[in-house]
Amino acid sequence: GAGVSQSPSNKVTEKGKDVELRCDPISGHTALYWYRQSLGQGLEFLIYFQGNSAPDKSGLPSDRFSAERTGGSVSTLTIQRTQQEDSAVYLCASSVTLASDKQYFGPGTRLTVL
Amino acid sequence: GESVGLHLPTLSVQEGDNSIINCAYSNSASDYFIWYKQESGKGPQFIIDIRSNMDKRQGQRVTVLLNKTVKHLSLQIAATQPGDSAVYFCAEAHPNQGGKLIFGQGTELSVKP
Image (cartoon, rainbow over the protein chains, first blue to last red):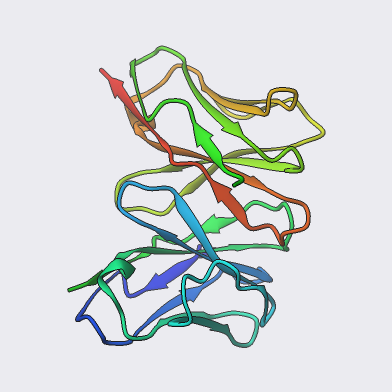
């Protein structure tokens, strides 16, 4: 079966523009996670979904960041008015359920803000 | 604050030798730990996990050891191969935080032929 997929794989945008990043989790996985990885760094938690609801948005860096999930499947992470410090690889992961279950990661979207 | 950190940022080993990658965690309430391997340009790949009610778990060529007394986690790779060259991350999960993972900074493993 297919793994987690993300699109686009690379995105270059100008400062101030909005961007949308997409994640398709593994079919049947109810939990979905977004992480951010800056160059040479570990992964930083952003938000997770259980079904379509997001109980924990504590990791979102600012109100310019938002995410939604529809139909318990695809999720989009939106960054409004992008800044240069938003440049990073955005990784999505899914797991069968929440709470102490292995997460499977997608290949990531590399975002570059000029 | 709470964090998961690695003792060594880089590790260089000879092909065929065993590798040991270490990780320290600070939250004694964490009940789940996981190791990922990340190759350049790719997402993290699951290697092995362990729950806090265990102190050792073995996979294929890999072993994870958990010492809750000193809050230490290690990943052992037997007979290291060039294909094992990558960055290795440990991560911890807390029981009441929806499974979100807190990652360490990573150790880069380099295997010399």
